[in-house]
Amino acid sequence: MPSLSSQSISAIQASLDAATANPKSGLHGVVFVAVDKNGNELAKATSGTRAPDGEGGPMTPETVFWIASCTKMITGIAALQLVEQGKLSLDDPESTYKLAPELRDVKVLAEDGTLVERKGDITLRKLLSHTAGFGYEFMNHRIMKYGRSGGLGVPAAGFDVLQGDERDIVLQPLANQPDTMFEYGINIDWAGILVERASGLRLGAYFEKHIFAPLGLKHIAMFPTEEMRKHVATMAQRAADGTIAPRDHMYRRALAAQTKEEQDRIFHSGGAGAFARPSDYAQILATLLNAGTSPRTGAQILQPSTVDLMFTNQVPQWPDFARAPPGAPPPSKPEYMNPAPEFYPQEGNPPQGWGLTFMLTLAPGATGRGASTAWWAGISNQFWWCDREKGVAGMIAGQVLPFGDVPVLTQWLTCEKHVYDGLQA
Figure 1 (cartoon, rainbow, N blue to C red):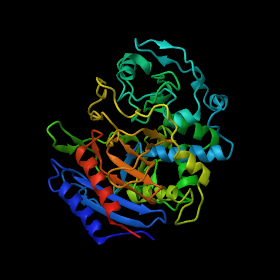
Figure 2: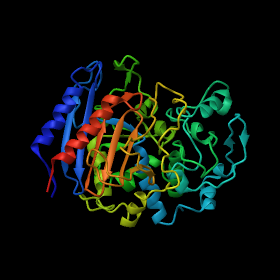
Figure 3: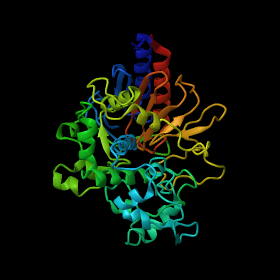
Figure 4: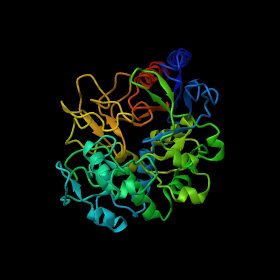
């Protein structure tokens, strides 16, 4: 059974403490957890406070984060469960259009801002691999401009997919023709809509019944429970001078919705909707390490062959998909995202991969991770990785904008390396 050296555990804590020593210019608070394929926590460390101003007390293992796009992997599990049951098809477009006729009629936003006819088909596989053609308005200037010109049917309103309004998803055109390029976007929100329509359950209820409850998870949900809300981390914003301060929560509608009636009026975002303790999320990662069966409860949520499929590169034709070409424009909403010339830089620029809902580092990483390690992130700076080759996974969680926060990224890579350095047989 793997274990972690006491030196590595101490080094992880010391690194986090150094990062939070100056909460105004470093990090106000962060949580890190690493697990093995048996669900054992190899390391769990917290540092700092739940808010930059110290309000709400210290970060603890009980702290709850909005995990944003870390939700995508959960939606992928849900969709693939229904594929296993024959209720969804990965590659049949007609089955997709039957459940979501809106996708049959969706237009493509051309470079000149006009809408043109879609040429290729949309399938669940393309949605999960971000090759169906959808984008994000906070990354794509054309989509942002189209939204502000009346894309929601209201001039100047604009799109904001993080407001819990389904119209921001269903009224958004494609940014590209299907299967012509990788573009990160609302594709997996559409996959969540397919899960709802195929199962007859709202997505949050589906997650709870078919993923969270079988894995014994109590502190992860589309809408935080009363107990979870007591421990939610405050959202922070980093200014251009490097200082951070509290800001209003960008996913406030879901955070504040306490009754079923309120929650039913809010879009259940398969792309960004979940709140969680990192330790609960890590148990989903442990289940993937264990070929789809929870090492703690024994519940099987995916077949081993399906987990293999999730970790199979879906975009070999685009080995540089996450490397921005020279002259690429910066994100269209800089308050949400820092410029990112490359999602995960690696020495020698090896080919990049994308599985079903997450990125794959196909070559071994500098931290010690093995080949074909899965990883992804949330816009408010949460990062996870899942290394089936070496049987280890983990998550680091901050709650600060914009995405690509250097102090959080630094701690992720540092703590991950301490895990690999300290693994003992």
